[in-house]
Image (cartoon, one colour):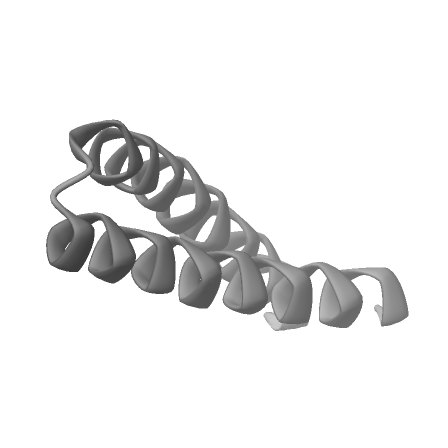
Length: 61
């Protein structure tokens, strides 16, 4: 369970980093940053949802 808590925290930090990267791309008009942030955001959100489903199924009796 400690690993899943660590992974959840890591995913949250990566999602936050992607949001910051996207914001930087918007303000600097760097479309490569925006594309990378969108790609990373989608991946980390999907992984976070899978992790939450796994934790929910683990805690269910």
